[in-house]
Length: 476
Ligand code: CA
Image 1 (tube, helix red, strand yellow):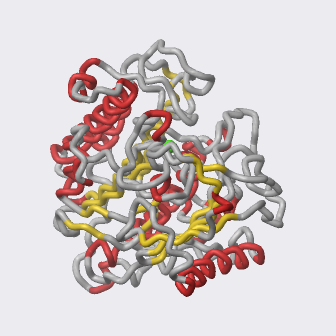
Image 2 (spheres, rainbow, N blue to C red):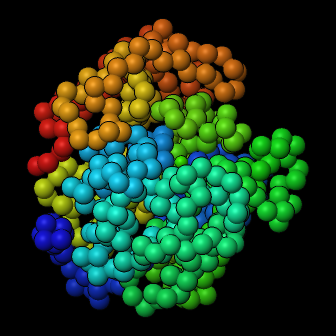
């Protein structure tokens, strides 16, 4: 804790109070994180098949990013990026950790300072409700990683219906601040209620709430009440997935209603993201119009619904096209809390306030980088998306993580296009360059026609890699 306090001194210059005006109250931060919700699912992104009025209301009252990304196409690494503001390759967290309650390495490394740890130094009360998935050992428990209060599922997923069948971590009891509690009602409803109680309980003091749903991740367990609103969907798997999305939207609505009824709407910054793209083949989720799915770094795996609102402080009904990433939440929120960034480590995220408020519309990132757990590296800059195939990973420094890419060798990688069923041998089709503003489905490879753009994009990847080789942990 000493170390954390040392690096989160109040930022006197960036607090609005430094101008001499009355110091505004720090905003509450309400962060919704959905699980496996595809880009093509929400009404506010133009898709009407599944009704999502409550999530859509965040877009209507705020900002919709059309180029909002996550730092990984998988659950746990995406959360590792979110919680640290850093590319998770810096601490060997590129893959999901197995459920290993005895392992002190299968989780978010303790060397990494988390967002709630920082927020606590600014006087925030911090709460996490829902899916953790950043380690099963007690040392990784949310209460040990910055959250004053925790209720939820500690693993990577869970049954929704009490008594339903499920794998090991899907069937463990709920956890409340380290104590087991049985699941007695439909899980998504319970998470919405617990989050609402937190919002009500802490009215009057600055709070940070991370509500990490496991919906609409499998298992596809839904109630009749949810199914009734998606009964027009003929495909049974997709209908059940749609039911999970409806349940998610209901729970978001309950929390937003509580926020309004407790008079905190005007002082709360609300974020809504998905942790990765939809797993099309598993749950028949929809990433339209994007190519790819959960598990790869094509647009459908990493470009996600990405919303933010703060009534009275941010524009309503606005759209931002500048590429942004979940890791940007860390520096954006820290500044609003009056904190400086830690000065002992590289933070890869960028403050989004300028593009959100319209005060500084220049893109916050020159380039975003994507390194999946397979053999494709990607970069996005402006309208361009570039991919490089690498025939093996050669990260040269042994990392202390069993779920790291270090030393992994893969002889080839075949990607199956979910829409056409066509198998692509990626090494036969590289490099790849797409204008994702004009061609979000990434159908037309322009690498040969745009050699200068390709070289610049490759340069972003190679530069990051060279820097990483020199200083893999990103300490300053
Ligand atoms: Ca996920």
